[in-house]
Image (cartoon, rainbow, N blue to C red; front, top):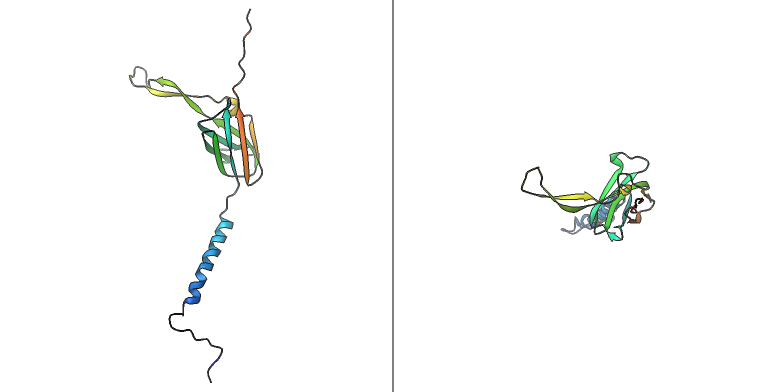
Length: 159
C-alpha cells in the first residue's frame, strides 16, 4: 500500500517552494533594516536671512546646551539662505551662524605682486562666537527660521 500522506513533486518543481519564499525573506530584511537603521534624531530645516536678505553661503552650527563639547555640535551648510540638518537629537541648542564675504584683494606676502581674495566675517558675534540664538528640537521634523539684524548704528555726541 502506498503512503498517501507523502506528496510527490514533479521533477523541476523541487525548489519552487524555496524560490517563492525568497521575496518574503527580502521583504523581512528590508523591514528590519528600516526599523533598525532609522535616523537617531530630527530633520531640521529652515531659512536664514541677514538684514532682510537670504545669506548666500555660510554655516549653521547647533551646539548642545547641556554638553558643549565638540562632539555635541552638528554643522550644516547654508546655501541661498536655506539649510538642512539630519539626525539632530531632541534637546536645547545654542545656534551659531557664520558667513563671509569678499572685501577686496591683498598681497599674500609683503612685497608680492600677486593678490589673493580677502574675506571678512560679516555676521555679528552675537550670532556666532557669543551667540544669543537658541533652538528647542522636539519632534522628528522641525522648521526653524532666523532673521538676523545688523547692530544699530551708534551715534557719538557732538560738542
